[in-house]
Image (cartoon, rainbow over all chains, first blue to last red; front, side):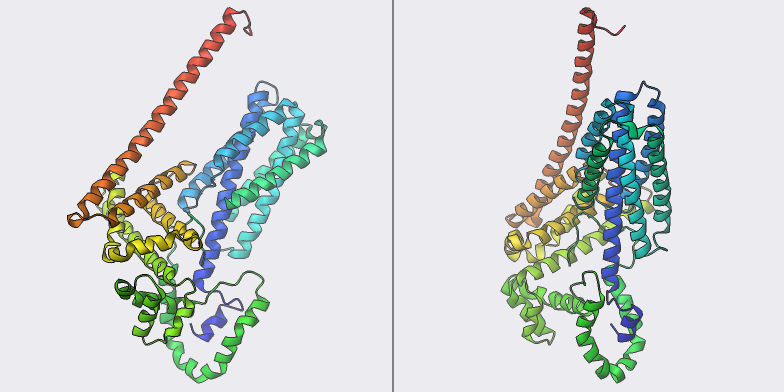
Length: 195
Length: 288
């Protein structure tokens, strides 16, 4: 490799091969964890509907669930398109999500909403950091994906606000519950990125 | 250079690997004359630039430059013919290097010794397999035929295993090298590359846990057939291909069994639910 070409590649003397590898790893990490996250969210809402389906708040949760389903389908397609390995923990998130949704719903409508608020706030931040990473890597190449993630992030924040509107903060032990769920989500995200 | 298990380049990616580096080398042709003039001045900077770049670089530096990578590939390629004589060892690498006119000290570039040669061969064979699979898919598309998964996978595995046959005299040694703990991770990555490529080109669209079961079962088939291959003495290894066919049939019947079990499970659980509802009605515990 000639020196002028190295200069052109700027101070970072990374070969094109290494750079492509880096991008591929970033993309696969993002898509893998997002698919897991959307599956988890979908299952959480399913758990909540199992308990609160017949109450007045049922249709609202149903609507949020349908939006999560849309997100999930997008990521399912991306997994195949970009040849990304799905996380091996999918069955675990399937069960855990349902259990979390049903468990918090048993605390009443406020509990379910508190769970929604906690999960959606973590997911909103998570999407933001992913968008930042993609912009840092190559804003042109990832334009499509960045647009999709931005839309999904807006949807999730909308869910977050819906949760707050429906008395999430009136849930029993709101602060402790919220913290525990947030920590759990962050742990799940960390694991899904790697395993 | 480590690659994470199971993720591969998206199909549209055209700048990966040798393709990318070859194009950068051809574009260097024009610069070469400039280099020799300024070469002496810059070569010192290049030698020290590793330190310079590591100060600037916040992230992890790639382990080797493009130049080193190309040199290593060339040496390993030249070493393959010597495997019959020396086995998958440093001696073979030294012989290969010397055949290219390089000093024998170049074996220092290969800290894992013979294993590097095994991995190089494995990776080259994988690349050959991938181009074979791509070609096959294109051919089928042109004829507007659907891919028949069973025969496709059989052909793919047979093609890949046939690449071992030229080195079959020393292949048991290669397999043993791959089972050493320090080489286990790379061997696992190589094997997953094979099964992932085969499933991808066979048209696998799974995006849930099936992704793992499919690749796991195929890896088991591949590995067992490989072991059968090295002790097969039949004409053109026909026994091995029959063995392969039987193993693939096992996988298919296991899949059917799993589906049947699932259906049985559904029927049984529906029946149990019905029974519970009936009992509750009889005992007057219904919700009406």
